[in-house]
Length: 254
Ligand code: NI
Image 1 (cartoon, rainbow, N blue to C red):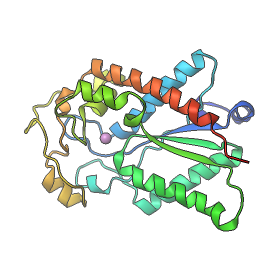
Image 2 (image 1 turned 180 degrees about the vertical axis):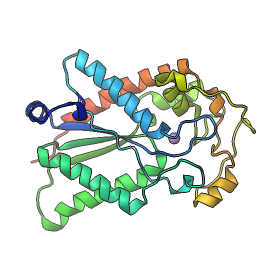
Image 3 (image 1 turned 30 degrees about the vertical axis):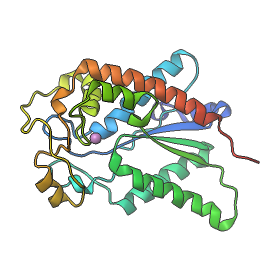
Image 4 (image 1 turned 135 degrees about the vertical axis):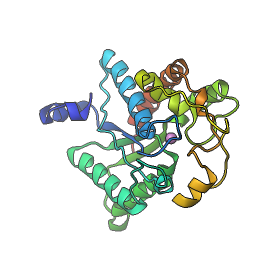
C-alpha cells in the first residue's frame, strides 16, 4: 500500500492491523558521468515498491511512505544538479515526518536509506526524537529503524560477488545497476577515465571536486548492467521483506 495513493479512511483502516511504515530516504546528488542525480533515492524507492508489490500479492499490506528524496549532500555541491539539506535542516525535517506519522498511530518507522552521507544525521534525528521523551519521563511509543539498502540480508555478499574489483564507494556499479534495471531508457555509455576512480576522505565541496574530478569514488560505474541490477533488486526485496517483518514483530518491554 502506498500512502500517497491512499485516502485517509484507507490509512485509518490500515492502522487497525499494522503500525509499520517504510520510508525510502536518499539524496539528489551527482553520481559521476554515468549515474543519475536521483540514484540514492531511486534505489530505496525501487526496492520498497517492488517489495510492496510482492507483499500485496500475498495479501500482506506493506505501507510505503512518500520518498524523502533530498538528503545531506554538502560535499557534492561542487557538481551541477546536487540539492542538499544541511544537517540541522535535515534533522528538523526527519523529526517532523516521524512525528506526523506517529500522530496518526504509526509506531514502527523504518527508514530504507540509499545514501551513506545521510547515516549520521538520521541517527542523530532518532536521538533527538527519543530525547523528547527521555527528558520528560514520558513513554515513547516509537521504534525507529535505519537500514541502508546495501546492508539488507544477502545484498553485500551478492555485490561483492558481482563486482569483486571496482565497486568503490560512490557512483558504485551496484547502485547504478539498480537504477538502470528500473529505468532502462536511462542507461548511459561513457568512457570513464580512469576506469577505477580514486579513493580518499570526504570533506567539503571544493575539496571533493579536487580529489574526485568526475564525482566517482573508487568505483568503475561502467560495470553496471540492467541484468545485474535486476539480480540486486531481487535480493534486496527479499531482504527488505524479511527485515521489515522482523522489525514489525518487535515490541517494547512493558
Ligand atoms: Ni549513491
